[in-house]
Image (cartoon, rainbow over all chains, first blue to last red; front, top):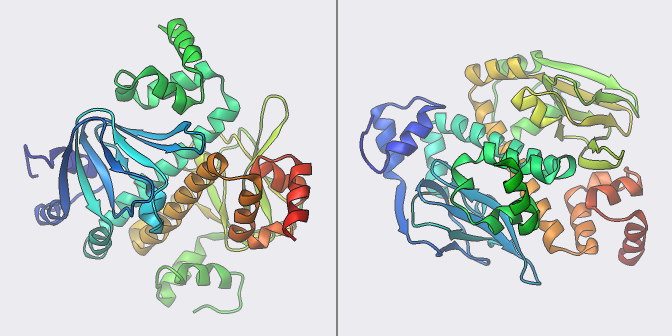
Length: 195
Length: 195
């Protein structure tokens, strides 16, 4: 395997699901674009055309929607080993509705939609990889919707800590509260209870 | 193609995305189980282990969650050419949280999880088919979440009619209101406005 490079983590990530030859690894990494971006910067803003999805090598990001009244609704966080984008814009080729913003200085690998389509035809194992990844994302989103109907704030916070152990320490309190649909003061109270 | 059978619609559905030989079609249809079920019956109830997902040949179904207070939350409708299940239970092998109930007399084709896994290894095109289907489901769910933040009840109703033209006429008013997060009387008012 290609070692000690910017690609080490994404190749490890792939090899949990599929097995690629050395030449397939090289073909895959050749279509990735490395992006280094400091914190509090935007990768996507509403109205943008989005031709890439992003794998996080290091750092932390959030995707959110700003409603008409300026209220922020966090749709997704991402840290190391996660994929993030405005997926509706990326897959449906419609203008972005979300902001994608860095919370920390971040290093990302961008994969372009057209290059990915070619990759699917050349190395069909990527069909399998992204089928499984997308299934996980779909099921997680359904689970999250059910949790808001079914679970208390405390249960949802504990579930969040379990699902996103790397995020809980790195994201400001009020961002997590927003994601969980709680008031920041409620989340502070819950955090004191569970420590 | 295999014609004029219970499998005609699912094979047409597949052939919009992938191309299968006659023997591959036979291999696929051999793992399907036909289910005929009259209206107001349950296919899944909370606590069930769910080893199948269901393609709708004819009929209409809904998947919903009943909360502690007995309030119903409709997660998904399905009519002809849709897939439905408790997908969290199906993919994560955890007990079901949802009810899956028929609204009309229905004919379904069940596909078993283990049989599907074997199918992926034997006919990798199914990786592609379900990658694309799951991506569409994931993006639709994200779009629906954003719509509740972003759009008025009227806009959401019009979007629903556009997305689910076959459902709007067949599902009781209060079910659609529930799905859209509207009061039944608000939906009645909206419907009068847009006719």
